[in-house]
Each structure stands twice: as C-alpha cells, then as structure tokens.
Length: 283
Image 1 (tube, rainbow, N blue to C red):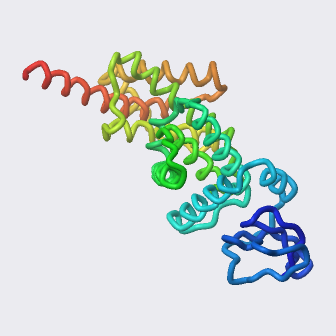
Image 2 (cartoon, helix red, strand yellow):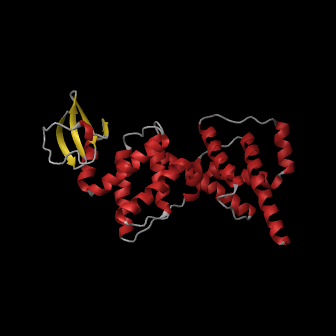
Image 3 (tube, helix red, strand yellow):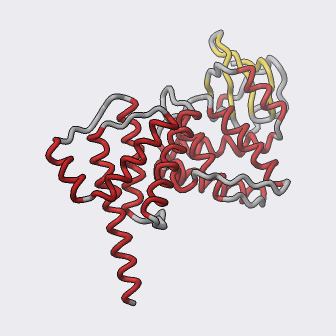
C-alpha cells in the first residue's frame, strides 16, 4: 500500500489493490513522502471516498487539529452506536466542527432552536454530541454551548441512516417544533422538556409525520373517533388546528384517524398540566 498523496500528518491518499483510498491514523504521514509504503499498523481507518477531491480540499483549508478532533468524535460515535457511519460524515462533521470552533472563538454563538426536540428525537446522537463538546473543551479549553451538541447530533443521525438527507431531517424536526408551539399557545401551557407526556408527544408527532409521508397509517374505528371528539373536544380542536397548519405550510395531510391519536397525546399533556396547576394552587 503506497502513499499517493499526503493530506496532512494524519491522513493520506493511498493506492490499495489499484484502488484509491483514504487512510487515517495518528502520525501516519510523519516523515513520509509520495510513493512511500504505509505502515499498516498506523492505519486506524481505511475507506473509499466518493467525494475524494472535496475531502482533500477541505483538509487543505482547515487546521489539522480540527480534523483530528472530528475523527475522534466519529470514532467515538461509531463505537457508541456499534455501527459504521456513512463516509460523508468525514466531510460534513469536519467542516461543521471547524467552522463552529472558529465562530465560538470569535464570540459568535448560534442558538439551535430545535434543541429540545433533538434531545428527545435523537437521544443517542445527542449524548454523542454532549461527549463531543466536552472533548473539544478538554482538548482546546474552548467552551462550547450545548446548542453545538444538537448540531453534531444531526450530523451523526444523518450519517447513520442509509439515504438520509440533512435537509429532510431538519425539516421534519422544524415541523415538530411548530406543532408543539401550536399546542403550547392553544392550551396556554408551559411544557417542560423532561415531562414524560411531552416526550411521548414529540415521539408520536415524529411517527405521525413519517407514517403520513410513507402512507403507513393507524386505523381507528369511527365509533372511537366520535367518542374522542366528544370527550376531549378541546384537545381534538387543537389536533385539527395542527392538521390545518401542516397542510397550509407544508402540504402534509393528516387523515382524521391520525387526529384521534394526536388528540389522545394532547389530552394526556393537558391533563398533566391541569393536575400540576391544581396541586400548585393548593400548596
């Protein structure tokens, strides 16, 4: 396995069985030149990169330390999840992390408005993100806000799924955030992210959208739906309001049966808040 091109001290392009690959490892290019034989014991990752040229250009534009940090995060993520991530993560996460470090060093912090939803929808990936920002702080002494853990979680989740699309994931998470906001305003309640009912609601909203997009729908008989309309009229109207907004803003049509399941989750949250408020009044 010969070196075709040195990208930085920790990454090289190699020729392996007449195929061009990226080899990554600590100090893999130290005191090496083109056409030198690679020390296979130093190779930590070896893969074919479809976006080879883009990857090489990125490594020329960012500090080597940022690349090393990104690779350490990717390694941790793959070990934590027990599976390999899509090769594109080496570009997307490295690019994001390097820019984030530059921004934060300059005192520019970007708020992640989807933070609460990401924490619930992508719990494992968010835990990886938390590890990542602590790791960056440990290695650079740069304090990274928790918002960055959520951004990193999205990159990990995108790389975890076959054929996934970051834009689609962000769109879905944004839609869920909008749906939650409608519930908050309609019911006039403050929703705590650690409430189990809130977490169940978020999870249901995600699957509700997913089922509709994939034409996989719940079935609820008309008698049950009519009962929910009568018994939980406030929550049902709220569910209808959400459905109308989904159609108006995003072209997503929820069938009436889905209104029924959504009503149940809204009502559970509503009853929890009513009980909590009553308890506080009696104290």
